[in-house]
Image 1 (cartoon, rainbow, N blue to C red):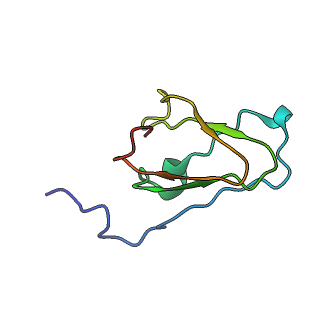
Image 2 (cartoon, rainbow, N blue to C red):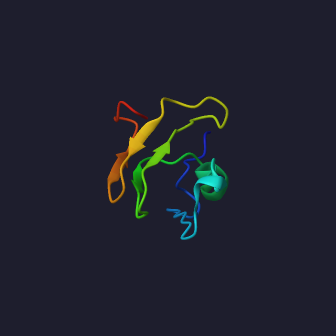
Image 3 (cartoon, rainbow, N blue to C red):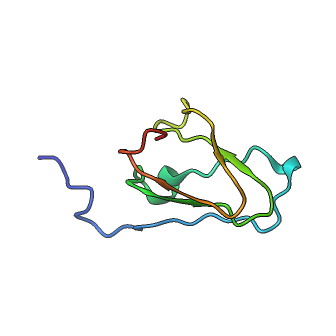
Length: 85
């Protein structure tokens, strides 16, 4: 019998931030799966910085999708129904 992924207590969300990020720090990898011990279901990517942001999403940690451009001050919703996911 398969165990339901929600049958045991687990961390339900994760937030990553970097208040001193500069171009020389790029690229940065935030591993949602390693933190939550499962793949994420949906979420948001906020760009609180003064500059533009580009990000890619991977479902397996190896193969990444297209680069998504996020201007300063913008928010993207990320979910499997999203074409950029």
